[in-house]
Length: 119
Image (cartoon, rainbow, N blue to C red; front, side, top):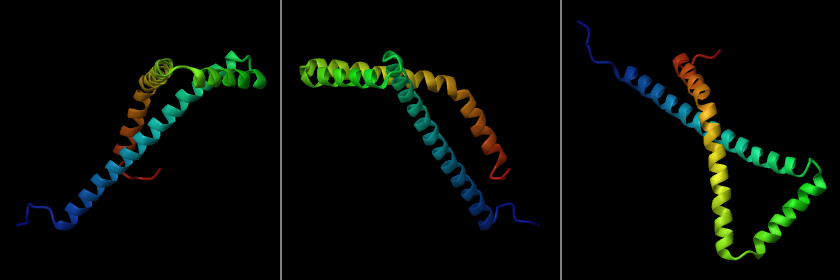
């Protein structure tokens, strides 16, 4: 009669697969979030370029004007501006996460269902 308990080798193989899946999910999520954050920052940059009519000199003039006003503003105005910029970035990241999440979850499910098979 065969022993119903799995052997040590089978348990180690299963633990290895679980660890591999955890690492894959962790790396996939971190890379996906990094890409989403970069996309949000790129949207802000694109808005600034559009505001400058696509002209590099006007773009850098806007940046210089913004930096001059920021440096000479009082601390309360700086804090208010910082909160507004943070809210803008978080809002854009939130919208991108909502838009991209279903396709990411589907891809991650396919990858995990494939179970380490290359192809």
